[in-house]
Amino acid sequence: MRLLLFFLLPLTLSAQEFSLGVARIVPEPKPHLPIYKYSPDGHCTLLRNGSSRMMFWPGEDSYRTTGTSLFEMQNCVKVLPKGSKGDYDNGGAWLYSVFRRGGRRMLGFYHAEDHRFPLSPNSDFTAYKSIARCASDDSGLTWKDRAQILTSHQRKPQKAAWSGLGDHCTVWDEKNRRYLCFFQEDGRFCMAMSADPEGRPGSWRKWYKGGFTEPGLGGRATPIPALAGHSGVNPSVLWNTFLDRWVMVWHRWAGDLWISTSKSLTDWSPPKLLLGKPSKAGKVWYPTLIGESDHVGGVSVSLLYAEFPDDKSTTRRFLTRELVFRKR
Image (cartoon, rainbow, N blue to C red; front, side, top):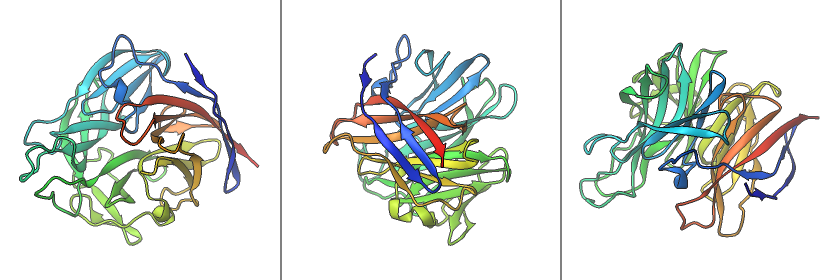
């Protein structure tokens, strides 16, 4: 395995310090993962699976693998295929966040894309986005009860245009017994909340002018105040037991990664640059933080992300670095 010898000096964010280690390539699971050359393509879920690990790979069709570590994944199974021609997820179902709900039952939240526009018959690479929920009774091998939970206040346009909302990460806030979903809408960083342990449609409320007051389906949203000046997409949010805070990382369309922390999930610290562009033409996108899982971590976590050689490339390198937190 080739090591990429890039280092960053420690970064200061509020009263904490951060440092990044050497970049390593995450190998393709054995024997073959059809979406590997496009991975990562959003937030990944990594969970304990007895003595091993279970990983969900988001893509147009999403997959599940198992293995002893991130570097020893195998048993690739397609678990969430895209929807049919007339469905809201006809262009893809990217399974971004998965939660255990007891036994073999799981809940999933996925990024859905609709590629069918009335006046644009050839629009396979343009999407009207939304966020949907699904459930599994067999540890994520098959999913049912697929339904939208968050949709844009703007209707799907007649002609193909990137629109809607999505590019999200969902977390379970145990202290307040609620789900928080962080997503982008109209190019702004927004959030929504559901106090329903099943996260069902109709239970979600978007953050609007200081509170969760607008419906998830079609309601309006205002940006997260502290992050409004650093709007981005594809966040990863993890509870850090060492810092006793939530940590969020995300990418900007410009091609760099940023980081912020929070005690409440609604008030965030001023964002700081975490990882810059690898080159003038290149970019780093789609970060995920992994500790014990993608939900909880400690003093040292893994930062997963995609590195693109330039803006025109769709294939990428799947890289990981150790991210270490240190208190002053």
